[in-house]
Image 1: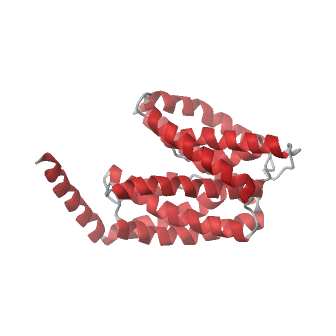
Image 2: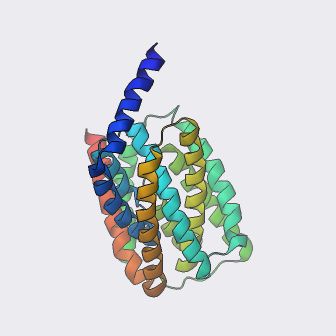
Amino acid sequence: MFFRGFLTVQEKERGRSMGDWTAYLLVCPMTFLAGIVDAAAGGGGLISMPAYLMAGLPAHLAIGTNKVSSCMGTAAATYRFWRSGFISWRQTLPCVGFALIGAWIGARMTLLLDERVFRWVMVAILPFTAGYVLKNRNLEQEREPYSARKTWMLSSLTAFGVGIYDGFYGPGTGTFLLLLFTGLAHLKLWEAAGATKVINLSTNLAALAVFLAHGTVFLPLGIAAGCSSMIGNALGAKWFAQKGGAFAKPLILAVLTLFFIRVLWEAVI
């Protein structure tokens, strides 16, 4: 009886959210903006997720529906990066596998660790991350490339580590991938951006499959927002291809600032 009662409440919430056009008017512009940011710097979820929550969706439905728009938008950006020649499939596909394994481990870790401890760790790390971005005036600065084997190992290790973070907590995953691919594995900025899009798309699709299986998705709102996100991602990818680091750096700093405020708020509350 409790489960049937829960479904009844859920259906009522679904009906109100899907029938209220203010939700679409709020969420779609925000996912468009999130798409622009996500294509160039990652972290679009820091903009889109609050929009779903402000529209009145329960948290679990907001997360699931956000995955629909995220997958659609990231697919558009990935296609654009591929057409621009920014994706090295030989380099990227192993990273996808390691990221998926890491995400699974991270999801399992949520059962063992207190998320509040992790939030305080992020509060300490984020200012240093922002300082690193500010110190590197040009994100496109050429770094001495490693050997193919070392690059593969460091890229895969990065994908695995950030995958664990993505499964455990998640926000800002694309931003961390981009920074670590360039700073640790010495990938060129365009290579790092292309690999980040493919990895993000893969992990988002895996998560979306879970949410769809459990019925925690508002498809009409998710698809409408996804169309807005696709336009935003396509524009963001186009501007990234034209302006590179000059376009990405301020967006990365904005994402890190938003993330820091969010994590600090959650840690204090």
